[in-house]
Length: 524
Ligand SMILES: [Zn+2]
Image 1: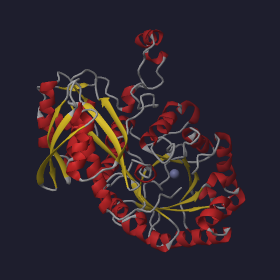
Image 2 (image 1 turned 45 degrees about the horizontal axis):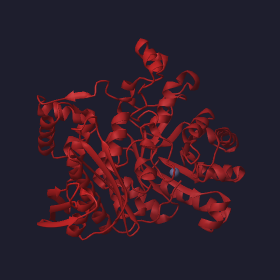
Image 3 (image 1 turned 180 degrees about the horizontal axis):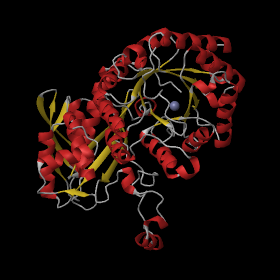
Image 4 (image 1 turned 90 degrees about the horizontal axis):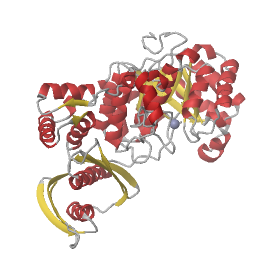
């Protein structure tokens, strides 16, 4: 088989491949579910980031997952697109079918290898696991060249048994061997030793790429990944903003910037276009409705803010006194004021592109009209405002429910009252309700109209940019029948933003409810 895959072409021993699993491992986290269009928007941004590999989903886990892997595989031309797969025949075949049309297709086969997983989850012997692994790799190898194999829960697996499995799957055709710290249990030093041991004891170790996949349960995801690289790993699996189950996965922006900033020590490089990091972080945060914590390294609002007087003085004299990275290298606009009243449609579309928004996926006409309206209300329009507008537009497509009008009355002496008009599957209806506050009244009216009554698990308001005229962004998390979905809304009026957020969440709930149930999350 010809080896044309760009990732497999020798890139030099100082090259660390970035394998992004935002759309698979990240998406498995509660409240992070995305629909196909949203996943495509993230995938396109990952392509702009120039990551090497995109794990687009777990094709066999649900028809929705299959469809998103297929669409991403067909759309992207740069990165390798792969699907996760267990060692079962139907999984492998579904994964292969989903990536069939990819410019650079791949499959990621995994099975748990730790005794605790064998005994309580798989009910398999070590021999069974070994056989299943080689069988699956052999089958995939008949169809494609790019095969990654993962020993799930590697960090709690017996090293000699793991060396044996790795030797066998390499013999069967695996090209990348991933040793995940599935439970986030490793400490950097031992994690590094595990890679060193495997590279020494596995036959054919020098013919494959070793990969690290770490979880952040002890806050060590990035540190463990770097320890793996120092011990020969040349691929890191990570997610934008570090999203993922429990405490999340290794954060892409942190690990990439650690390698870049400490090139003096590590001597490594990646292919990531770091200027796309900030747009990627914001795009994901807007799509899943999870705000980035202000103190989050690299992409948090305060990551480059110097409040303390002594720091500021130093920074003003020479930025390098306290800044180890330049905000512009991450794509944080040095001048956030970009557009205003006199900006044209062309400038608006250009800015959207720079911010990572795909103009084809939104109603530009509407977004531009909303932008002009905002310019009239506010003197200054910031990037975050524009992103919020664009996402508000992209959220509206193909909805069951649409907010048409909203009237609220409240005073310190009367009970808050809301009258809401909505289009429910095409028909316009109005309902009213009273509540503890205007938002509460409004939510009760919306529940009446949609005939849905989920539990509101989280509700948060954020002024996207400073000032009382700022665009407010509301995120909410609702749960019904064990399904958790997030919703977002942005508007200069906070009650309207709240209503939009809830309507967005209810639309998702409705779409998800129609999709066949997804298997409980599983994977390395
Ligand atoms: Zn994982």
